[in-house]
Image (cartoon, rainbow, N blue to C red; front, side, top):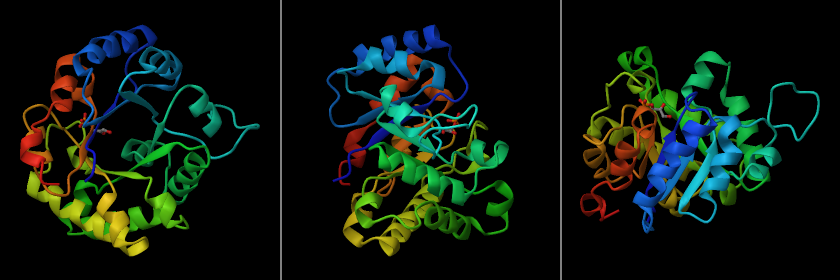
Length: 257
Ligand code: 13P
C-alpha cells in the first residue's frame, strides 16, 4: 500500500502573512485526514513561520530547493540542516523551473538528493520531458535518464525513502494536463526504472506523483490510475478550497493500489 501524497508547490508566491493565511484556511478543513500525506512548500522566507504554524498538525512542510554544502561562502544558498532547522521534513529537488532557469542538471540534482537524505529530509525528485522531447518520441528515454541520474550512487535503503514527481514541462502552468493514460504510461516506466536500480519491492512502495495543471476537475481521474500515487500542485494549491478538494480526492476509485 502506498500512502497518497498531495503536495502544494507554492513556487514564488506568498509573503509570510499570505502564507499563514493560506495554511490557517487549509488546516482546520483537513484535520482528521490520516490516509493522505499533505505537504506544502512555501518560499524560503516563509518556511519557519509556516512550519511553526503547522507544528503538530497533519501537514508537512517542504523547501523548494536545497544546497549540498553544509556551510560556508555560498552567498544566497541554504544548507540542508538549515532546512530542517526551519521545520521542514521534505525538499523538492530538480523542479523543471530550476532546470530551465537556474542550470540544474541531473548531477546537481543527485548532489542535492544526497545532501537532503544526509539530514533526514525526504527528497521529492522532479523529472519530466519538454514538449519538443515528447513530440520527438523521447519522453521515456528522457525520464529514464533523469531518474537514474538523479538517484545515482544511492543505496536501496535511501531509494526507498524518495518520492518522485513526474511533471511534463509542457503541462506546467499551461492548463494542459497529460491525460491520465499518458501520465500512467510514464509513471509505470518510472516504477520499472526504480526497480532496476533497487529492487521490485522498493519500486512497489515508491510514491510517484503527477504534476502539471492538476486541479479539482481532473484529480480524481489522475489518482484512479494504478501508478499515480499523488499530485505535486502549483496554481491550484494557492487557494484554500481547491487545495482542500485535492486532498479530499475520490479515494474509492484509487483504493485498489
Ligand atoms: P501547475 O499545477 O501550476 O501546473 O504547476 C505544477 C508544478 O510545477 C508543481 O510543481
